Length: 335
Image 1 (cartoon, rainbow, N blue to C red):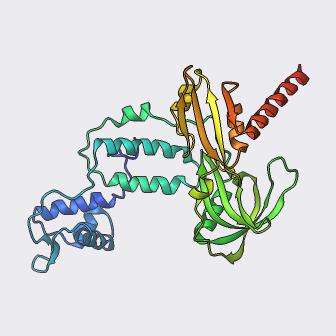
Image 2 (cartoon, rainbow, N blue to C red):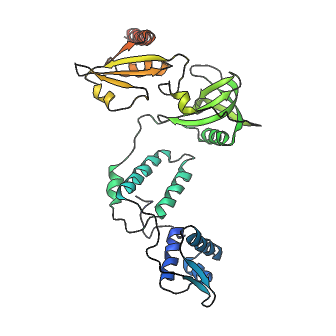
Image 3 (cartoon, rainbow, N blue to C red):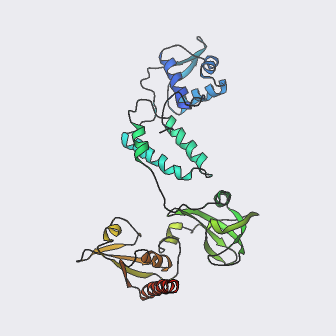
């Protein structure tokens, strides 16, 4: 794994932990190095050395002091091992998986800050970890069958506006609409739900909180107005009754039975926070959830190609029946 490898290909500028480790070794040997000598040997400025020494003294609690008689630094008491980051094999493995997961953001606005943070963590590790990183590099990966098409400029602007409470104006086209509408919104939260980005914002046109897809946002700009986000807004609470992001007003019990051909797929995932499962005698499984919108779960049921049967509510049964009928009609028209 390129980030974690300690080899000669590393950038010339040494990471802070590596510099401080070298300073520590000089102090342990009683050589009384000073800032000028250290800056020459480590190829950094004396200001950087002063900062490193201050960090070692104040944050790492190392007993380092300047000794005028030697015009250099020394330890005032015995110091053992340099206090570097301790990491277990399991934690390192988790880091490797995280690095792989971050690769999905390659080429996006998130790549640089994510990789920078990861390198800082990696640079804090000692060289004593014995781990065949190449094996894991070749054996772990992340794949998505449908890669979202992101407008990185829009995503970046939405994230910054939500973080700084800045009102936005943009043109927004709803699904299947032919024309866009001008919207003025107070952006509350930008969330990635099941691999797709959504903006949750108060829409002044609708007078309520609405969910916006960044892919359909055009001609955005800041209005120059700052807003006060409501203290009661909670994305978790807002989405509690949705199957993904679509919410409604009427909570209903949704019961769906899956036959033995797909039952294992249902058992292996937590589909909703309110779900309960019941095993059926024929090898199938019954899934029960409480939802306040049926739009997304109706599409989900259709994806199981007849291996799922809706038990209730009646509205969902009817919508699935009508959708299946349209599929058959379209097939007949194309034959």
